[in-house]
Image (cartoon, rainbow, N blue to C red):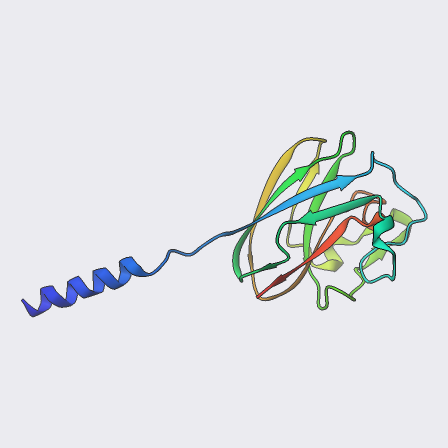
Length: 158
């Protein structure tokens, strides 16, 4: 009888432990009618007036718990293809990502590419699930010109 009671307690304790939760971050890829300013310098870590940005990535959460994070991505543009890439960032507010000027894009490999939702046509959606450790991360679009036009955001994983 004692064995049965111990087993029952173990089952009850196991049942009360919540299952590993997945955090969802809704991501909106946005632009002002696809307008790209070739001279824009609104990349991460650059002093810029971001209210002048013609493109952006909007996250509904900027702080999430460590573990499995699903990015549900929506391209709200009417006529421009966008993508979303996630990389680690030592200090997400100040760190400049490795930029290849003649390609007008970030060097994804040098930045530590963790995953992406690539080339979403206007109005389309996609998702990416990553197991993220505590730290800062950058989320950006790497279609040529989009990053420098303000299409990046940061997320903190605690």
